Length: 541
Image (cartoon, rainbow, N blue to C red; front, top):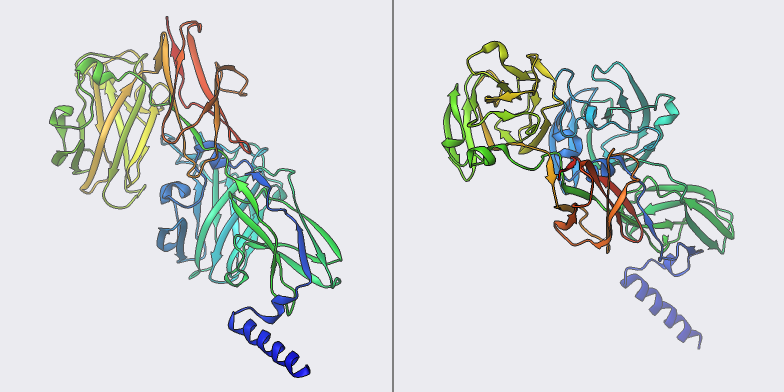
């Protein structure tokens, strides 16, 4: 009988080794009771998700200010939802939120027109890799001259890590910062990667993590992971504590983006023991498409019978210092020769500036961005083509190499020359593509000059959700007259959101004439998002 027992023990041992299961995995001390695997949490409110409906998840150069305004970096790459670079000096930097240059026209994601509410977004977290142990700095700015700022320094370990930073600890996190900069290291030759960045609101929600230990008394590390394999790293240390026969830790999910999370403990000589999962649900990324800042009725279509859509040479006139012009598939291409090339747009009827003031154009160029060299566009207009003193020049519009859509309210746009502004009747409208002194090729998709979105009896409200994996979502639509507080009048409730563009036809016939803002409230059973339209709807009867 003893021989049989020895043989069975040998067989079990061989089986364990051949199956790849270490012997210590057969007898772990730890047993998790919480989380239970059923809990789904809402992602904590995050500045870029709320402001742009687009988290800083490194899937696009937009997540770091169009991939520009970086310093002392080489081997820059965007791949697989990660940003990677190597530092070339001791003061490298990237800018999740660039303030915009002083004296230029703020646009798009410039911080001057997208200020951070510091009282709400009070924590910063980042998932990043560093090729060596170093220190990083988080800066924030209150002006465009960089002399009113706050900073927090934090240690970055070698390898991948998740870092949680409290900017309020500096005593300088206040008001409405308009810039956010990350210096990933203070050393040359450091390779680093960024997986995601969050500027979020600290919430009181906690996740109960509980376990029983049959051999208590050891100091243990509780780790966070996104899979059940401890051999491929983890997301970070949740807690170092003395494991008791019954232990409880309350984990803060606020810093973390959407995803599936597990907790594990690995005692010396034993296999790692994992908990059941916790799911963090991404908030609906609702964006209202109509009404919007681009406006409605198009001037060129209304009075010329044809949009300025660059379908052919009839869309431009009075060209100077632009050569090799071509039109293909609705795209104009040309080479600005000397930094002062321009063309005029056909204006067959004087432009009523009180009505048509929403300017949109889609543009790109060859070569690298270089602010000092003049990668900027501008528009010039006049009520009298023959009187040079009446020409009005808009402040420079900083433009980027990749296709980008620029939207400007000419009624609010500052001027670099002229005193009339966008007022009265304009008979001349000119576009200067680039101010770079050397020849540079540019591409223009369209220029559009439009009125506010307008309705009499009906208006089709349009919206979409940029979230890739959606839960069933219900959207309610409201309107108010001040774009503040989300305390308006409901138009319709609980519309089932579908993929792509959603539409609802609003009967406006009984709504008093005036200018209104639309907002949506999207609920998916876990998370709620509220979003205002970026442009008004003018109701006239």
